[in-house]
Length: 366
Image 1 (cartoon, rainbow, N blue to C red):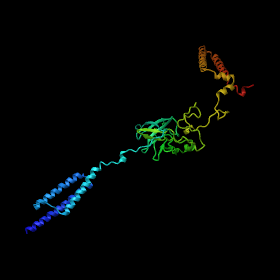
Image 2: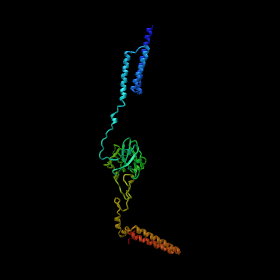
Image 3: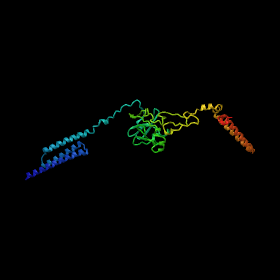
Image 4: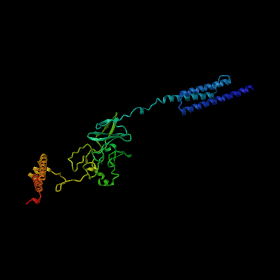
């Protein structure tokens, strides 16, 4: 009976040890797979638990534990897996992809590119206006890519603020602040012309405005480079409606009057020809030739100095004031009327002789 009790006790202890070993193995593997516990700590904890189980079994049996072949095989497999997991854990942080460590080497830029500013001067979300080869350009970021366009809208006045505060669209467009027309920042074409003003869109068709110029831009070693040769280098208007466009970098100097816009791109420069009646609208008035045709009187008027005119006006004013005051002092109203009549007639005659005014009128010819 005592032998039977010992045998049953040994079998129960042996079964309990196997269950404990398998549970320990499964819990450790689950911890490695899901909790990311390091392999060294897992191995140490597993060994401590195995030793504790061995001591408990030895105390029950009163002798050292030898273990069955199945338990030994399971223990060996667990140690092999633990060692492999430990190697993977140790080598994983060390392995870094070479592609992430090495930056891609960009090709060199052509000689036509010129440095304009540091890349730090154009952070994302800002715009920088620069002058490159006499052209005013605007550099900015759009969808993580550097862009460079003509700084001012060709649909608005020259002295406007331009695209510096303009809004972007979702389809690579920029809105003119004045006319709300939309230009493409890819090729400079007009995407939408006067969307909120159908009257002006008909009076000034899209062909009266040229596209904006686009420039190639790139960053190298923290420096921004721009190619001043823009997209309109060989551009030709597709319509014959208007050909007098001012290209970027061209300066226009005028004397005022008709066609005096600083640039001919915007629709405000589309003006009718102004000319004197009887002259040729296509040729400006030649003041020298007109003066020569007027004769000696015209030459006298053209050579009349401003100082002489001012002095004459002051003298006439003094005489008029003094004469009027004398007539009022003596209460001679008839003399006052004669004084003003003679004075006005004399001034008119003098002016007519100096300017030769009315000599070309047929009513003055006898």
